[in-house]
Amino acid sequence: MILSTLIGLSALLEAVSASTVPRFEPYRSGFNLQTFKIDLAHDVHRMLRQVNETDVSNTFHFADSSAGITLEQLQSLRSQWLSDFDWNKEQAALNEFHHFTAEVEKLTVHFIHEKSNRPNAIPLILNHGWPGSFLEFVPVINNLTQMAKTSTGQEVAFDVVVPSLPGYAFSSAPPLNWTVDDTARVFNTLMTKVLGYSKYAVHGTDWGSGVAYSLYDNFNASVRATHLAFAPFHPATPEQLAAQNISLSPTEQFEESEAMNWNSAGSGYFYEQTTKPNTIGLALYDNPVGQLAWIGEKFQNWSDPRAGTGPSVLTNNEILKGVSLYVLTKSIISSIYIYWQNPNGFKSSYSKAHTDAPLLFSAFKYNIAFWPPALVQTIGNLVYYQNHDFGGHFAGLDNPPALISDLREIGTYWK
Ligand SMILES: *[C@@H]1O[C@H](CO)[C@@H](O)[C@H](O)[C@H]1NC(C)=O
Ligand SMILES: *[C@@H]1O[C@H](CO)[C@@H](O)[C@H](O)[C@H]1NC(C)=O
Ligand SMILES: *[C@@H]1O[C@H](CO)[C@@H](O)[C@H](O)[C@H]1NC(C)=O
Ligand SMILES: *[C@@H]1O[C@H](CO)[C@@H](O)[C@H](O)[C@H]1NC(C)=O
Ligand SMILES: *[C@@H]1O[C@H](CO)[C@@H](O)[C@H](O)[C@H]1NC(C)=O
Ligand SMILES: *[C@@H]1O[C@H](CO)[C@@H](O)[C@H](O)[C@H]1NC(C)=O
Image (cartoon, rainbow, N blue to C red):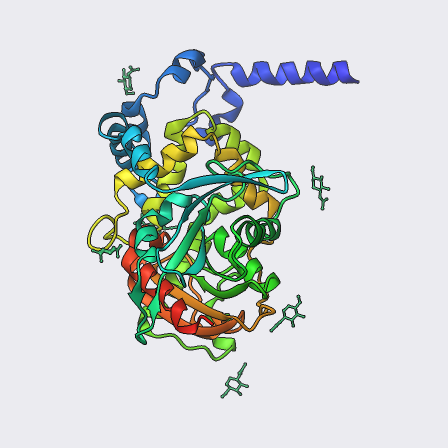
């Protein structure tokens, strides 16, 4: 039976490879039907050694940035990485801050701790996400430690703590069963036990908003104010907003459309990282240019089109610094695992945190997700909401003065 099937198959193969196929003659007209033979030179080793960009650019429409990073952008970033970029200089500047590591629940947690010289400074922990890092808060740290006034004239200064998420940069990778709630518990220990603050304020964005919300919800004795620039809840669709009678201003409509566009055309990486972290992680881990493409695209696409000008310090050098940190600390795989570990990290049903502590929120025009005040007030005790027409997903880089100013408003509500 098997043998006769094989004979049948080989006869069929012979018929297909014959150069004239008269039986098909009647169907040929108009379709240019030709016989075909696979004939690829099998010099895979040469391909591994070099990418022929002439070849690549002739083949695809690599100039369309809605299709991902363009070849030109990648080449330009790569050549800047090779020529101008100076990791040693960046590292020396970063070492101006006070860095620490602590062992908490068997994890090594890396963090920056910059204290204010004001005795009544508010302790504040800043939580980053992916593909960010502690670097995205560097432009705001020093100013937050300085005394300033809130909009109501109150004096405010912060003791600033910026940890690296477990599995990111210099923090060790957590066990496979780790979630953002576990990270929140570890960071609460960091703030209350390691650093000895009995109460503190929290900021979070991206995955860091999941950590921040978990702190806000689960540690209401120690977390006495929270500021978010992102929320761990799926943004509502226009239909869902309408069903709740939430109407949007023109600016808000733009932000809503950006969020919906991310959902339909920008979330491929999210599903890949949630479902197949090994595949993308192993493809990238020893491939700096691959990480530059995968991460660099996010920095470029998720920021204000004016990034790198005006208040924004999100330059190409900043992108290269961020990617270098991932490459040099070999943390791309462990960073991506946060998606796999938290498949429901962003929830569809909104729930109010178990706390009476104030919640402050900042929206930035070019962020990839949008929550109007009417939604944010369903997740906590919303006391302050500010919408900025400059900046994107990485507010600490793309509009640092606005982030500083909104964080300072914590002082208005701090007791
Ligand atoms: C690169 O590709 C182009 C176009 O396909 C070809 O002409 C050229 O010979 C290739 N160069 C190398 C080094 O393989
Ligand atoms: C998670 O994994 C760690 C180490 O693999 C184990 O010690 C711990 O008990 C696990 N936790 C839960 C909640 O399953
Ligand atoms: C929305 O407004 C309509 C008309 O004013 C009202 O009948 C409906 O109950 C409202 N729905 C919600 C969810 O508030
Ligand atoms: C960013 O990506 C979105 C899709 O996610 C696309 O519509 C948009 O054109 C891109 N923007 C830029 C500036 O590359
Ligand atoms: C704070 O959390 C506790 C549970 O740990 C809860 O019983 C209490 O109601 C919460 N406080 C507020 C104001 O929600
Ligand atoms: C930080 O404060 C200094 C001194 O007031 C100011 O010049 C600078 O613009 C501030 N930086 C940011 C990012 O707001």
